[in-house]
Length: 180
Image (tube, rainbow, N blue to C red):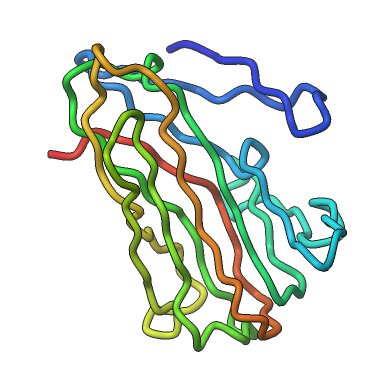
């Protein structure tokens, strides 16, 4: 296992991300603290603590963040392809759940995956109202092959800019793992 130091948007150190490399295929678990959540309102970008409440997951292994109340949501992150095993196809998934009291998710959320040197970005949509509540689910963002000849950042995001108020989405993190 290898540990990679991360800093938040203010340059402060945060807990490390752990890379697990079974048989040369990296599986990367990115916890919520390494993502960049923001709400845009005019020229104001609110801080993480004003938008989310942090709580430990039921097994205590990691923190998750519950969305308090926003009308625009964007959660994004990135990972260097050089941190992955070359030539392997990876999939990116957000790990989330909707609380029983969640509201405002009747409009699909958008997912975006940007791969280094790809000719176009990959977009998809998912309707969270179709998903079970109070259970962790995986929302696929897309897949890619880690190319040693085209290193760079893989960027991923989950966003919804409809303008309707929404609450109750809990984000545990993002998983980047080999796709078999």
